[in-house]
Amino acid sequence: MNEAKQNMKLGVNIDHIATIREARRTYEPDPVFAAYLAELAGADCITVHLREDRRHIRDRDVILLRQTVQTRLNLEMARAEDVIEVALKITPDHATLVPERREEVTTEGGLDVAGAGSELKDLVERLKEGGTSVSMFIDPDPRQIDASKQAAADAIEIHTGRYANAEGPAARQDALDEIRKSAAHARSLGLTVLAGHGLTYRNVRPIVEIPEIGELNIGHTIISRAAFVGIERAVREMKELLKR
Ligand code: PXP
Image 1 (cartoon, rainbow, N blue to C red):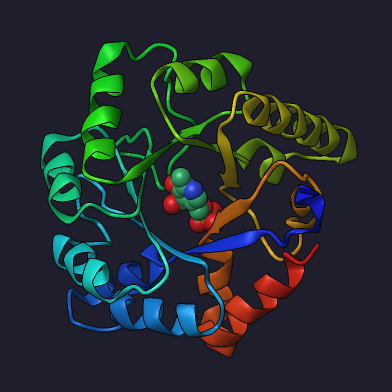
Image 2 (image 1 turned 180 degrees about the vertical axis):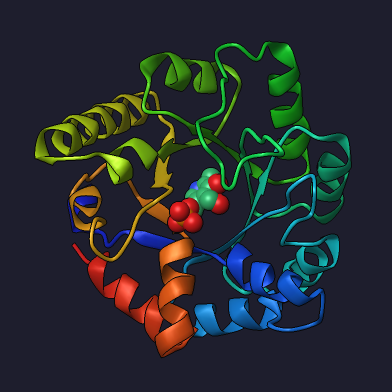
């Protein structure tokens, strides 16, 4: 099958709906309603990050989303015992293993799968036993891709932060080449390839042109646009950009 002819799928990260709610520690806006509207507008997956400090998404959200999401639910999670407990209880469709530091504003780098040892593989296996497919959020680095395969991951999500933050065309092209090579390498190992972080309406197109990448997880830019035009239109506009 020609992968290039399939439209890129869109996972919509709704964490920042919860960020607005937590600004007042109230009940609105509710990420569960946001997920419903995003799905009606064409989201292929709903992504949330249950952080250790519960700064935006809360356990209640994940439990309700598991019951209401009609597409697929992707839970981003660090290797923290109480978060693992939630994941094993609700068995999301996908889990994306991410690094997490309390002081960071958002996930700053990829997970060091190569340096993690066998505990990571044990976690992957426990999640997979419950029917959850597991992805590793990693930098576009062949060592991390090989280690993800060895850790029995089903997929990798390539961290596109360096590309998104690149200053100038040469640096951007360099970052793009690295992503392209990594995507091809991961596919050759049989891994499903996703990408995300820092992607926007302005910078997403060159990533869409990489045929080995099947799905993107995008949050901040969609929720930002939703503040002005509503989440349904914001999702629809992004879906348009993901056409191949
Ligand atoms: N993928 C992962 C693993 C992430 O941690 C994030 C940020 O929560 C995203 C994708 C989405 O990034 P952004 O909000 O910059 O679109």
